[in-house]
Amino acid sequence: MPRIAAGIFICLLAAIPSEAGLKVYYIRHAEFGHNLRKQYENVPKEHWPSYVGDSNAVTPKGKEQIEAATGKLKGYKFDFIACSPIYRCRQTILPYLCDTRQTAEIWPELAEFNGEVVPSFFNGTLPAPAKNLLRGDRVGLPDDEKQFFFLRPGGEHLLKAAPKEDLPQRASDIKAALQNVVTLLRQRFGGTEKSILLSGHGTNGRALLQMILPKNRWPEKISIVNTGIWMVEELPDGTFALRMLNDRPAIEVKAAK
Image (cartoon, rainbow, N blue to C red; front, side, top):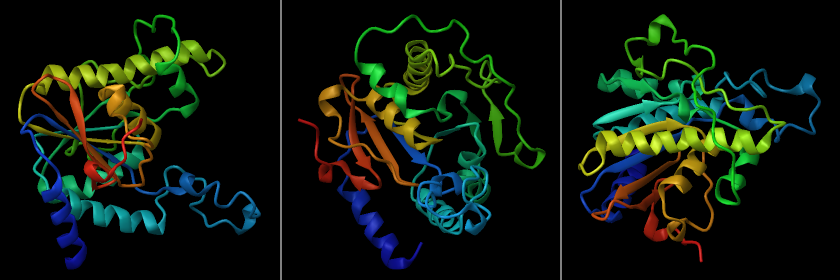
């Protein structure tokens, strides 16, 4: 990270209020080819760069973001790290794990999903979720990543929600998966002063933030940029407050009315 930018980032960190409670950080993955599909929708495919539309291909900008994020994350000390099983999330934090000799536990519930289900999380009644949500394919890790990532006991398989055609059931399943993330955080770390890092996606990160925060503390707009970080902190009453969104102190983020 450039010296001036690093200095500004440290100043921003100093501006974030602290209650010395549990801190949960969430970083969205870097830019990969699928993020550019809309940008190229009016360009003939024969003129697309090879990475456009490929969710497993990091873009030139994404490579720069990963390098910057590695430096940014070194400004923190994390007691535990969890990561989506998806390649782009692993690759985003892998250089950081390598440089700091840390490991991350794979949480299948952090995988991405289609945002059309999110409004159903908070409006109306949903059917009961499936009893066994983690019944998809077994999570696979390349041999060269196994020293940095490990599977959570009971979380060895990918999330398998109901099909898109059954929107209420799908919404229920995905909401339950996100609730499991909140439960894991509370059971393992609630009431402590630990700092936890989650590596995930755009839609997943937005919805999880809404699940964690009381509705009256939701920011007016939740949009997470590539490698942007949000952070919430547990208060003495057990609820969470937003402290940072897209690397900016939450005091600069307008809350919803």
